[in-house]
Image (tube, rainbow, N blue to C red; front, side):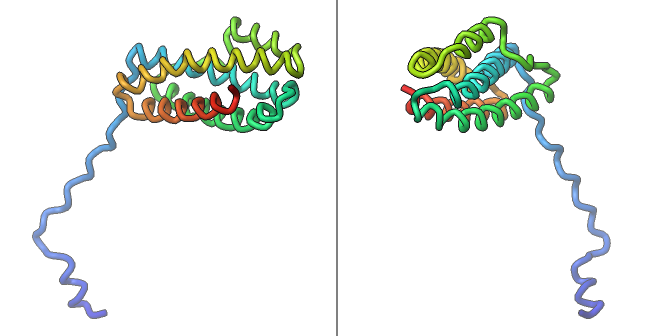
Amino acid sequence: MSKRALSACISPGQPPAPPLPALAKAAPFTSADANFVQQLNEMDLTHIALANLAKTHSARNDIALLSPTIVKDLTANHDTLTKLATDHTLTLPTKPSAQNQKIIDRLQHLYGAAFDRGYSRYFMSSTTKMKSAITAEITTSKNTDLVKLATDTNTKITTYQSQIK
């Protein structure tokens, strides 16, 4: 390639290109966002523990087969949530609340049909309550990362609910 062809690309006297704009920062958490993050964290931790129990305690094959997916999905969900919370200087508990730990402990002693009834009832009840919080978060939050996580979570728990009924 000739020297002349290369020099055609560079025009002397041209001003340098302007700097790229800074990456947009996510909107800060509002108190409603922080409250939602706490609720979602609690749901993730509790349902991960219960799904781990379902692998060995359930008599229903569909629940036993779905539980590894729930564990994998909600663990990934929890990891994303933890990163978002950390980015906004919010520290999340790493264990379920005492109230939810009692539910986990109670279900831990049940097997077969008794486990399935307790697990299904709790799952449907807790996820239905969580869906109203998710819907509120999706419609009111200005934090796009949190809205995306809420939307993804809503899709996942809707799928789980249809399979666990």
